Length: 192
Image (cartoon, rainbow, N blue to C red; front, side, top):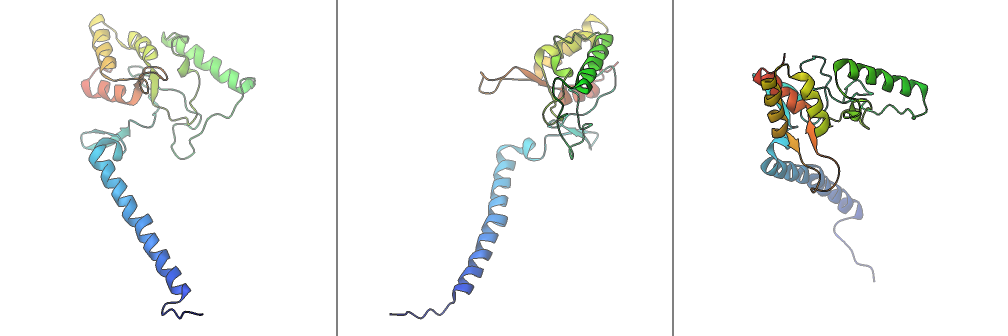
């Protein structure tokens, strides 16, 4: 027996598409964004660093700091650009890769930084935008940054205030965010 429906299958399908679109592309993103802003207000807005009301960076993306009075970030294969962020795609046996690593090693030693303690400054990260260095590397750089003993102690305290613990207190190494450190150095007038 055939049942007559007042609404055709096409009309049901079109209504379903619009209801799904309203929920999945409108309501759900608004709900998740609102939840993120309530629970993680800084992270939801991009972890932005502001100075005098101007946005000068983000804690999430590395920047190239050229001043000798600031902490060095990991090298970037994508020139610290977020759009074509990428690793070098070079293999360890590549002569080009080896020459870049050797050049970075020489530059670190010229700066007075031990490349063994700061290995991450020799190699770019997978995205080329990782703003973190190890605690050991931050402390090694602090030794070079501070001219006087008092200044070194101040910078060490600053590093200790910016330590990010291991994930779930067991995976990885203790790290420090270079962007946050340099922002605080500039804000506090530590830069030489």
